[in-house]
Length: 408
Image (cartoon, rainbow, N blue to C red; front, side, top):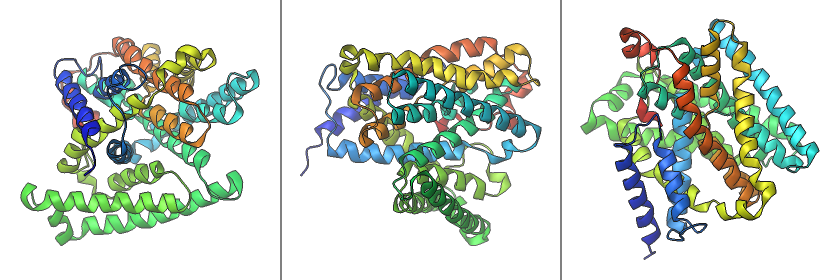
């Protein structure tokens, strides 16, 4: 039987991080940060008490899949309609342009190679929507216009970054044009899956099967959702894309397919949320921390310089477009932009994919993650001080809080 000692250490670390979350306010230090930092401390780069073996690696891969599933399920397409959606799309376009310009500048200056600069530009367009919602809801500021603008902008940021990573790491033939064609094909298949899922969600017997309560419905709902996840992950990988695309789209499909009255708040079955947050996602973050080459940053100045580059890049790419929002007061524009500059999970994913593909070395991947860690720790307190305190009715309004805290 395979030795599970490595997995035991990971789960002990995850359990201790969970206990720490009960003491440390989430708006100050979100749970994934605790898990990632613990993995770094116990990993080979520092104390050497944790080694990522096959058992941990397998669960970590599943954790990555459910993490992207959670991210996709957080994105509400209805928020992208109307004037708010148009403003968010314009700001997103400006952000993409800034990210591309920054990437080109880094490549021209020799700070990083061309392909690595492209990867960095893609990751700078992303935002940790789940973490943004977590800190804002925990602080009771979700009812403010700036917070709602940050939620919509963060949704677009996640979509942009996942699509960019899929095109960058897609293994389909024909270069970028061939990958774009395959991406369109995958989108068409996803629409078919969405239609089939939506029809199934409205068939009375099937709807009763997944909403009949914990004893009868929760297990069935989890099984069906895992099938949906695996179908899109397998399709994405068969077409030459990374599994992250299929997992993210599965979350999008889930939210879009549900009847309108079931889209408010958490859309994942409670059983799957418990499995994701209690086991799979913590394993992913602890294992990701243990895999970081932190020592390499100390001996490689060219990699270490990427840490401030990532922080400044996120602030520029995500904050400057928000300053164009004429529908918000100046303080609110800054607050919305700062919240959108909070990024961590996608940077961890990008660093992992970049290292596996050879675009980044271990120290550079660590720099991406550490830059994201700094934004999570330093940016939210500043942004929250700029957000006005909403009226009591707004704080508790379901419309003002699109997601529950469990979605992180």
